[in-house]
Image (cartoon, rainbow, N blue to C red; front, side, top):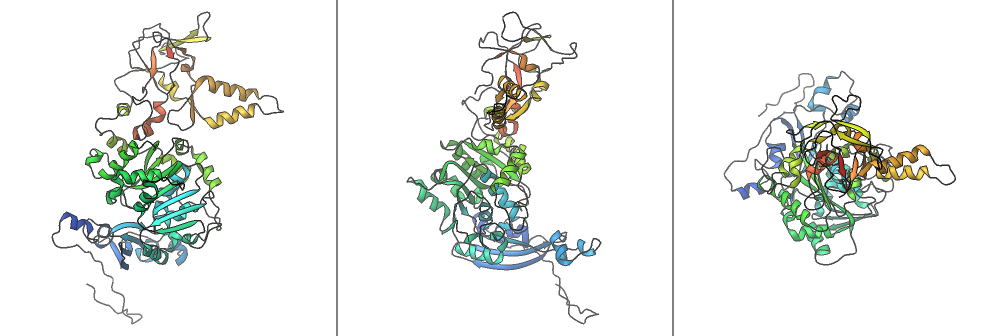
Length: 569
């Protein structure tokens, strides 16, 4: 408790500053603990009522609707300091001591639904960008978008930034949540800065609001009957799978997939990211997520699945997200280069009236980070039983030797290039100068230096080299021919071509299996194609597409011959 004091200078009573913590007493069953909003494992307890380092706690709203309990809290932690915007608001000079005090920092406003943290107004834009934008840019031109949940308006705001969007169907269970968000969290649904929109995103002419259960809506509309209305992108701004059992229902998952157009993309909040020490996914903390993933993998209309995570989305631990595509062509957009993605952002987003950047975090470099899942995803994935085929290739085999080609040091080189025999197609051939055991790596340094060219760039270069009315550009013509002769398309569907520039390009090709003595490091998948979902392929797709090994023991003096269909898939 605190005793009120009178300020000696002003004579006024000073406000009592109280630091408090609340712990729920009593014994409850596991089910009762899960539903009690103040239980020690609830988000309200973890973020607000329990920690003493949260020194400012104001309960702004407590409302029980027909569907959920809504709590809004304003909080400040002891070590918080004023933000840049706080400094502008208060006119803080560089050496002002208030920069180091939490008292002058703006509080974070937290929205809880049934005790589960739904939004933090300090990080909500990062969360919603991370949820929405990767999926939007995985589609070439999304027009019709569906949003399941998202009553705070954050996902809707992100979708409406896209010029191509013509209609948005938002399905939210609780109408009162939308009203509360407008009043207490207005920034989340503020579209006043977006050219062509309205002050409130909910009032945009492109938006249709439907108040009903999101999963029931999808099952009724797409589950048992064919609908002509499909979504190019479907954003499930709902609870993570561990708090949303519908994700484990095969009929519900089928309805989600059936709601997508032929190039459609689905994205969900996949919950807390795995740790490298986690057990097999279906036995760990996220069995529902694993069940949902496997239902998508088994669905014949899903072609690609990606997982990614972000540590800046407002939660204590990194938050993960899952994207599923109906067509494998989305891999080309997902695996885009930084400058490609930045151009798409510039080209596809509506400008803001304020001239400020439309994004606070998402850009090409951010997406590049999402392309490679952290190692924990790969580790937990490889604990599946039976172990997936590609898990045997998570790293180079350290028991095998590396045999390099050094053109300027023949004494150290394991290979030599000589003129071909008379009548051979190639002018030169590669020969081993030492014995090479089966499974050894062939010219890994040269292969790792392969040039990466996009298929679009190769096509544009070819078109430019043969412009009508202009003489052929010999340099470009030679470049395109070199790509055709020495390049192969990436197996990941990214639209990339890997062009060999070292000694490996001189190796002779043969369709005679008895002559061939090298192969790809990673053989073709036993199923005949890359798995729909594989963090292993996502993490190692470059090395899987370039390294070569000896397919049998090679004797010194023997010519190195690769199969004619080496890079066919």
